[in-house]
Image 1 (cartoon, protein in one colour):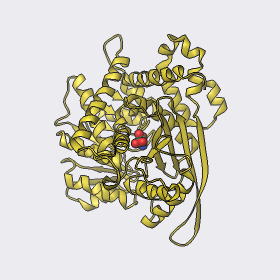
Image 2 (cartoon, helix red, strand yellow):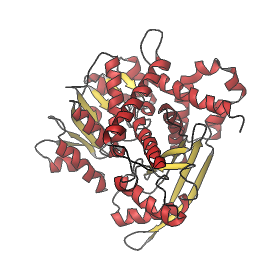
Image 3 (cartoon, rainbow, N blue to C red):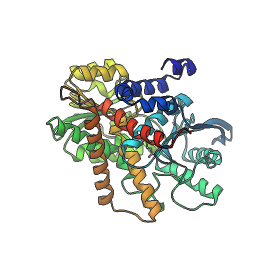
Image 4 (cartoon, rainbow, N blue to C red):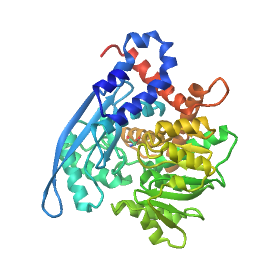
Length: 441
Ligand code: GLU
């Protein structure tokens, strides 16, 4: 860590992600001198390569705009590079390195053969028209298409990139490459190679994982109150499945504040989240304006100020601080399943773990998204489409297996389960073994 800190000062998210994993794996690593001899950790913490490129496009006023684009190909030991694209004004190489690093372990947990990658741009979709989004995606693909391929690197969505953006990116990829296969991006539309349930998969998978975690703790999700941050694709799927399972989603939030929903989110409100995302306004207040008798907007507040049994961070890294964790606990919260990548700050995780709040990390909880991307790749390679039932069953099995891996590697001498350790050690063992077996490269 000291070496990395000196080498990459200021890359705080990347250093935070590496620190968490190294802390977890230390005892296991020390039991394997062959890992040390092959310098597995020193190799694993560095991305295989990073592509950086200029993306120039024209906005609706006819003005020329320039952004930066990136693809971080982190680790291919267990399969081709796989991971999403993030369009957000705060995107930096540090953010994408942390996400690519996390992705490597997460993808290993899915049981599918996928390496880790992440990409994106500092392009800010907020306030952009549909035509601007299309022109940006096309300009972005003018560079990205040379870095990716169905057996090399398969991007997908992430924050700011959903089905619409994947469509524009795929159209331009085909035009440039003259390759008409369906396998270079996942999260495609259902009529052109996309898997049924991929849009819902991250949220659904997170709730399946939560069910297993609660079951192990002798509890049930039905009748529980849930607070969710965000209102994008992940939060949308989480609200849908939580509601289907009989829980009551009492809060969703955005950068402008929180919408408190005392009676619980209804299917109509859940559907409206899609319109809110497509509008590019990035304001959760719109929900309270649309449903004034059901939702109350509180400006500047987080979802964590709303009393709940279960907290599900579904928005952005480091969105839940130690103070938020204390407020949640004081208001009766007893479980937090992190759905966003690294959504909880280290102080929050330690507070939860030391104060009897069940906690599981994003790389286990949210892996259903990329796992279903893996299922989409399988369908594409076989030139067929599975039914919703088939995809859902496989997603269920995968989330159960991830939970089992966490239990296997995370059970402590006192019988409690450290899900952070469990997920990190399980992912590490798989990637480290694959690297070791393939020699020093
Ligand atoms: N961006 C998602 C994640 O963080 C999905 C990646 C994918 O489907 O490739 O896992």
